[in-house]
Image (cartoon, rainbow, N blue to C red; front, side):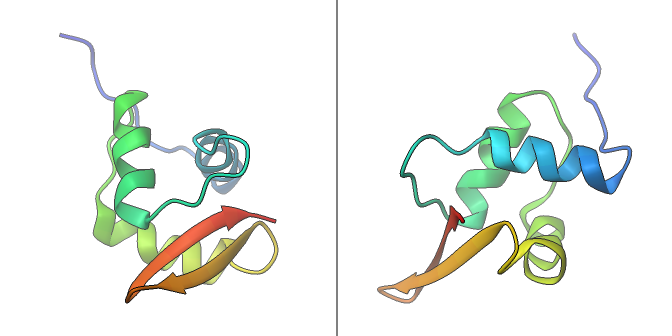
Length: 75
């Protein structure tokens, strides 16, 4: 079994999160975390949401609320 990778620094987190988006996609934080786990990283949804809110919102990602769900898309 392959060992799960951990995020090492903030710049690696930015690049991994931005890489999970396809062209024109809008994803929930849960879907972003699921796609990151598929790449072999260890991450919880509850740890990803504050990171997106405090470090990535408005500069890298745009938040849109649809039917009570927050959807994120690249700027």
